Amino acid sequence: MTEKNKKGTFHLSSLLASAVCFALLYVISLLALQGSGYFPQPNWQQIALFMSFIIIFSSSQKYFYFIALPILFIYACYAPIGVNFGAPSYQYIASVFATDLQEGKEFFAQIPLRHYGYPLVILGGALLYRKLSQKFHVAFYKNKGLLALIFINAFWGQIPFQPLQESYLAGKKVIEELRLLNRFNVPSEWGESQLDSRSHYDDYILVIGESARKDYHHAYGYPIANTPFLSNAKGTLINGLTAGGTNTIASLKLMFTKPNKKTWEGNYRLNFIDLIKSAGLKTYWLSNQGYLGQYDTPISAIANKSDEKLFLKSGDSLSSDVSDFKLIAKFDQLLQKPSENKRFIVVHLYGSHPLACERVADYKKIFDDTKIDKKYQEVNCYISSIKKTDEILSKIYQLLVENQQKNHRTFSMIYFADHGLAHQISDNYIAIHNSNGKSKRHYDIPLFKISSDDQQRHEKNVAKSGLNFTEGLANWIGIRNANIDANMDLFDETPQPDYGLKEKIENISAPDDPAVIIPAQR
Image 1 (cartoon, one colour):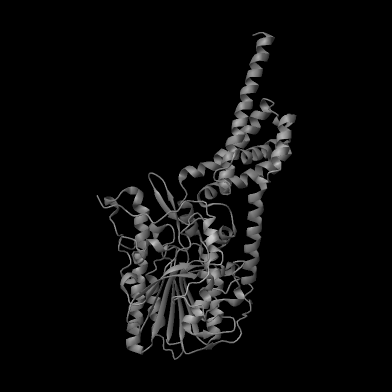
Image 2 (cartoon, rainbow, N blue to C red; image 1 turned 90 degrees about the vertical axis):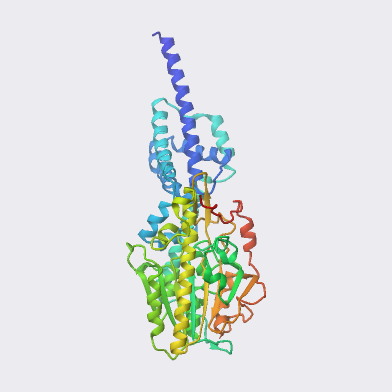
């Protein structure tokens, strides 16, 4: 081969290597941005800026391996989560602190296997790009025209570092919050409370559902009969309650305190357990949610203020899945304890927590999985888990009726759910999971009240806000306190303001995702 041919071959190889390097940069940047959760469909400007970040830091071996690669590693690790559930936020950082290993396994099981390829492509592509660029002397950073474009493009944002900054701020906020809670000395600011003439009952029971979206309940119009108790019992069904957030912690920290309704920040010094205790009621907390001991979640920290508490998953991070039916016997034992005072009892269910099929391992599904399309199997589990919760509510009600007959204690019971869920729908699979604001119906939750003296059934279409929930509970019990608005009734005909929630929902870019209806059986 002549010297001329050698130069031509080398030049062709360099051009080919440059093209491959450019393609690698594009793919790495595209997947990293998609995986961050901030840019599900990144535009060329955003992709170009991320490519520029890698190019500039590839100019030095130290910069590449000690700055660019660690940042890409963070993007790669988060990508399978981000592409499914959205950007890192306060809610997800809080969920990390609140999740035991069993829930963690269930969370990652929701991610399609193909999305676990994102980290391999991002990191493998970066290392391959480095190797090819060194071998064939591909130095994009020496191109003055390209550098000029990078400079201009940089004016449109600092994209590579935005998710890292948000994650840091969210993590810092959660750590500060948990540090405050775990001091065990968060003082109550309720002051003195009294019971007024509205306090008719001896026992008040609050049942907290989990991940139960309103439009999947037959009582709210879902065509499959999965709520025989809620659909027929004499009591009051409210169609219009909105949750405080899209996961347990984000929602209940607002619903179980008197929050700042402008900033949507919870106030643990005004939590509902301290309020109820200040009125002289004895408080109990029965839970099938995890309790993490030293690292209390905001919810378990509020629960810890109760006079008596029982967690079926108490402090063990390896806790296996426990059926909500196991709460029934514990609840019955509590009811049978002699008491001359008014009592307030929380029953926190595991309900329809993803993965829904794990929730009904001990319960007959509504449809036979072999007789429906495979893509609807998780929907079948979800609607069956709601029916299971409905049966648990019926059993709790029956125990209360029996206790009234035996011990002459009147009662009133409320059921609601902490938040809803969203869908991920493909041709072959329908997943129902939690996500970072991907559903316009995430905030739609059920609310039902039944009391020992109810003689009729009432269904009311009226807007009620989760940000007024603690005040609503106070008025249900009949608690008078200077910090409570006596007009905040959860069950009257008066609509409540949404405190900016409508605007939040309108800003959700995802299309509406109504409840999925399983077609007729084959």
